[in-house]
Structure formats: C-alpha cells, structure tokens
Image (tube, rainbow, N blue to C red; front, side, top):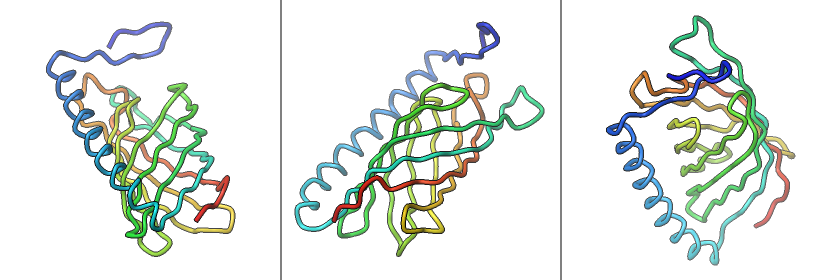
Length: 171
C-alpha cells in the first residue's frame, strides 16, 4: 500500500475493483427491493426510529502486531415492519478513518435486533446484535470482516461495542 504522511490508503487491482462493484451493486438492488416492500408495509403497521450511536472497538490490521483502537459517532434510522424485518442505515464520524457508514437488513426477535450488512468505507461485511434494552436506547455489538485480498485491506476485521440512543419513538 502506498503511504502518505503515515496514513495507509488501500490500492485495488482491476479484479478486486470489479468484485467490489458487483457486491455493492447486488446489495444495492437487494436494498431497493426490500425498501420498496417496506414502503408498502409501513402504511399498515411498523416503526421508524432515529438514533445516535457511539461505538468503540479494535481493528485487526495485518501489518500491526496488536489490535488498533477506534471509535465512531453516528446518526441513523431503523425501520421495522409488522413482520419484524429491519432496514437501517447510519452515517457519521470515525477514528481513524474520519467518516464511515453502514447499511443493513435484519430481523427483530422479541427485544433483540440482529442485522447483517455492509460498511462501504472501510469496506467490510458485518453482523450486529442488540442487547440490554433500556428506556433511552440499547447496547450493540458487531463483528466485521473484510473479504478483500489481504494486500487491499484497510483492516482484516473489526470488533465493536456501542450504545444507541433513541432520538424519537414513532409507531
């Protein structure tokens, strides 16, 4: 990877770029069809929550001999339909990448929300679960993996814990 002022930026070969574009395109189409379905189902019954989320965790970086710490502060929305299917997105600030975001789909089981999705930058696929719900929000944990070729990775994997505060509750 080329280095610029001590910051490592990934470089991608043509094959990796094509694979990433296909993956993002497939996920985008999936989200389009799911959200189209959500739009019709929310008119019947469902919920929409806006939230702020603070995360802390570690990145596993191949070149380093220890996990690298990180943190993020995000704003997002969660949509849950009457069948307890979830669509959510979030964007915000992060250290060390400066900006980040996630798109996910999932299922609500009682008070637990299980979501899978993608983080466009740094590129990762993730699984996330909520736990310890309170009146003002709930705790979350996620594990992320970068399936790209090892020389093209910003990090190999991430392990995050965080808290999500409700900004509004609408039924």
